[in-house]
Amino acid sequence: MARPAAGPILTMIYIVTQCFFPSVGGIEGAMTGLADHLAAQGHAVRVFADGDARDAAGDSAKAYPIQRFDGPKPWRRWRKHAAVRRARRGEAVRGVFADSWKSVAAIPEGLGSISVLAHGSEFPEPDEVSPGKRAKIEAALARADAILANSLYTAARVRPFLKGRPERVVLIQASIEPQPEPSPEGIKRAAEVIAGGGPVLMTLARLEPRKGVDMTLRALPGLAQRHPGLVYVVAGGGEDAGRLKALAAELGVEARVRFTGRVDDDLRAGLLAACDVFSMPVRKEGDSVEGFGLTYVEAGWYGAPSVAGREGGAATAVLDGEVGLLCDGADPASVEAALGRLLDDEALRRRLGDAAQARARAFTWDRRLPEYLKTLGIGG
Image (cartoon, rainbow, N blue to C red; front, side, top):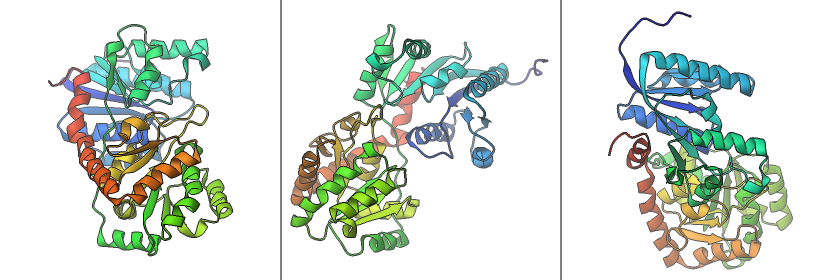
């Protein structure tokens, strides 16, 4: 293949990722937000992402080029590697952000600094990993100039796979967009969901066992004795929805639980604004664990303190006694005690909620982006 004609050399930041818009999830949001805000601040960005024609339908609306790759994993990775290699011929690439160690294989040599995001669950326990997988993780991380851990827990999961230079692990907590104020219509719709009840507990998450919705449900009978109007809003979809609805019926609390399914942004804002306590007492389920929990921060934006499980990275997202309370997410009594403490003590609830709201402002992209750029050697 002939080389392209010589042209202007641009300074670029590449993003090589499996997870990206329009897919929904924590990693997808992180990588899309990173690309959006790099471009908004005037950096030249090029994205190489997994996806098919349906995923690419909205790519033209973005302020940067996106190339998509589908098909079986080895074939997808080879094509992505080849595309990155071709693209860099006319561009001076300053550095690369990868969504995880798995994407490093698609990054050719000689592309400048590589910063790899680390989320937690993609790193197995050292005594549970096969020699082959350990070698792959170690080889990928050996190429990284920085590993961006989203919590102290994630940093600890990374370190057993490092061969030297432990200082490459940098704690950079996840970022959020400024959260929208609910419209009058959003407030009205939220009030219709709550239907005159209160106080309001809320969980906003993909419904899977480790999120702790079942433990919150188990706490409701005891909490309702002291708070007869208590309402629990469960917003989100997922494979655990059927089990949770059956559990609510079994416990006799279905009349005070509102399963909304996935909600749009305006209703989401209205519900979070009405929330008194955000409940997501996460726990470990097999290899699945919460690496951080950005939803706690998003709830804090609206002044809601959180109850979180101690397992995983939630303890970094929810500072115990400062912006919420931690509990043992696998112990129903511990979950009920933490929720009861906040519901019973309005002064404590307000103090922690105010602190959560102030802290959430420090998680916006305009505050965090310089930390990301610094790992590529850009900026001070």
